[in-house]
Amino acid sequence: MRRLCVLLAALVLALYPLLVWWGVTHQQLLPALLVLSLGFTMRLILASGSTPVPGQGLRAVAGLGLLLCLLVWWHQQTQWLLWYPVLVNGLGFALFFISLWQPMTVVERIARWQEPALPAAAVGYTRRVTQVWCLFFLLNGAVAGWTIWLGDMRYWSLYNGVISYLAMALLMAGEYLVRRRVRARIDDMERSCH
Figure 1 (cartoon, rainbow, N blue to C red):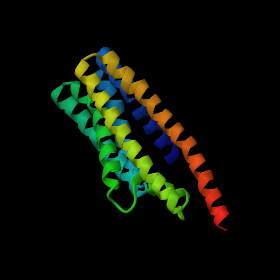
Figure 2 (figure 1 turned 30 degrees about the vertical axis):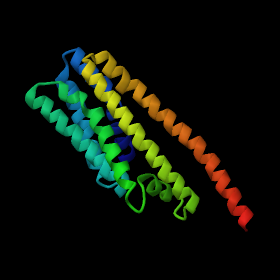
Figure 3 (figure 1 turned 90 degrees about the vertical axis):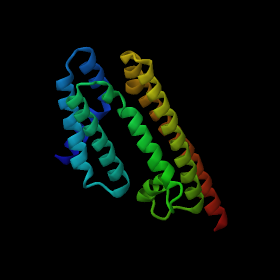
Figure 4 (figure 1 turned 180 degrees about the vertical axis):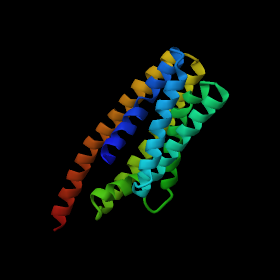
């Protein structure tokens, strides 16, 4: 049941730009706010049992989303909803950037869940991947902000609901391919040392 709730919350929040677009363009803001609030509430509750790294971020993002829904409901100004992608990217940037000055970056912590005895060469790689994600969050958030400035829901929805997701998927796929090559090189180095 928990897995189903996690998937449902993820689906609702992935559809955030579409729900906002639909609510604004069809004057159906209240139903959109209710669905989004339910998704954010489920994410907040489900993230409380998560491991620290993603759990903190998921709770913060869900809290921001709920706050924006409350502001829209209270002030009856849809503009607040448009800031969610900017805030999420800002939060992602902050979490990844701050981790660069900690003993373990966010990416290294995630990598250590799969492989606790991470080789030293892989640690350096995780630091570079963290830097790449920082740049992604910074650029993605800036473009999301620019779409607000343009003032056209079509551009906002297209970028935040399609292009941004495609860019993230491409980055993840590219990183996966690079990681496989780096891993093969590390394995070759370890074999030659033995």
